[in-house]
Image 1: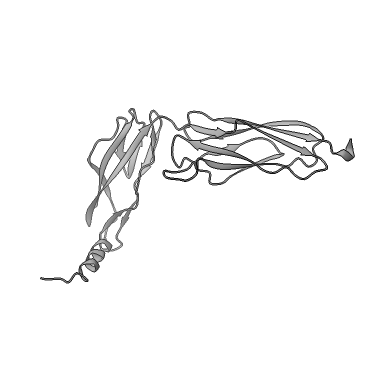
Image 2 (image 1 turned 180 degrees about the vertical axis):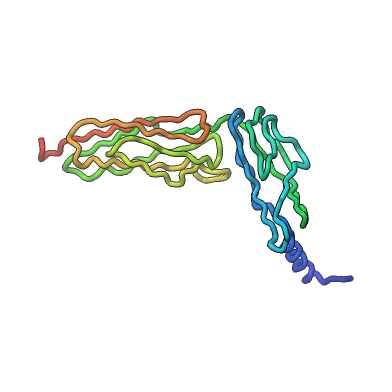
Length: 219
């Protein structure tokens, strides 16, 4: 039967919409060699399917040594580095679908922070000191990280809480550091900010020094 060109795209859309299964997972998180890894596949099941049980299988490629497909995802401790190209098949009684994924196994993520030290000066009769900026980058893209410190006079806030992803215009995520020296007597105060990430190779630290200088009216 002949179909007009205007009808064919509509049929293609309807065919996609009627697919009983669809991978919602678009990519796999990076894995660190020698560290626990878990990645779950999310698969949409058409509501018209009488059963929703989905089985997964790797039909092309091979997982790195130490990882296995268990249940709805990959789990284990990878024992080798490299880039692994895999085709995963999801199937149930209503149908099946296959999709290609790439798994990168590399060394543990390394956080980088600059500058190495932050110095803040406050005059008791002057304005509050302006915020200082710390730049956070990593050997892994889109890496979540945290900032911790034990000072009552210092506050650190993250712009995103993630290092930049591929193609980002930013060299690193920005952490704004603000001092609240009100009520502190003149003197020098020091604290340390620690930057950490899950399974990170290092947890870099930055020393923050606050100098409270007496104003002219208090000298």
